[in-house]
Amino acid sequence: MVRLVWYGHACWSIEGDKATILIDPFITGNPEAPTTADKVKADYIIVTHGHGDHIGDTVDIAKRTGATVISNYEITSYCQAKGVQNVHPLHLGGGFNFPFGRVKLTIAHHGSGLPDGSYGGSAAGVILELGGKRLYHAGDTALFLDMQLIGRGGLDAAMIPIGDNFTMGPDDALEAVKLLQPKIVFPMHYGAFDVIKQDPQTWKTRVEAETQTKVVILRPGEGYALD
Ligand code: NI
Ligand code: MN
Image (cartoon, rainbow, N blue to C red; front, side, top):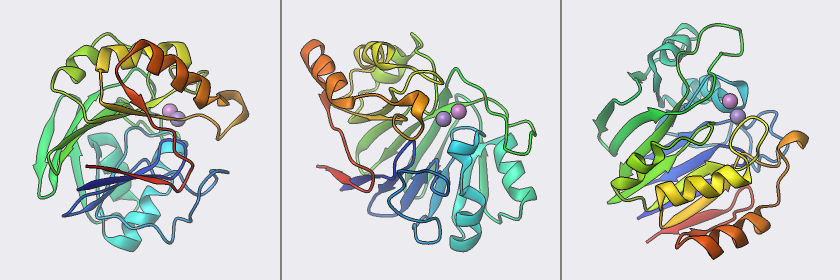
């Protein structure tokens, strides 16, 4: 079984039979975070890009738990320089079979500068295959037509930003669902800051009227099991 827990913004805990994978652990400083960085579990931490609301608490959590940080080469090198022991660099279009499943980085149209101003490579999205499920976490991105290719392999679930301003807003996120055609979509990256406030219920109504995809709106701290 695969269980997803939303920690608010773009942060998810993906709990499989063999590992807990944390994505974009922005917990400290996130007004909606339901937990604290010293409590979360992680065997692996996937970081989509270098912005502070994504790399977040990665270094502290990796040092405490010994989790392996999976990200682009520039970000794993940054984490190593900060004292993280275990890293696995990937880059766009590349995937690797980890003991728990497969992680592949996809394109994302966005920046990736790191909090101290150093170069964070290219922003990415993630395709995660584990426990017989195929998931897509879009990271921060504009809408792009290649989402069709990501959806072509079949998606059990997608996590996509709807916040507007820094990423896709509700209109483009609806188009993204049409391209990705996931069974379930979880809206994310709305609500943590004033400029990205959106009403996910309105978006759910639109998406479910125009597509076959089920929209699941979680509150920070809530989980959802993919059966
Ligand atoms: Ni960003
Ligand atoms: Mn962001």
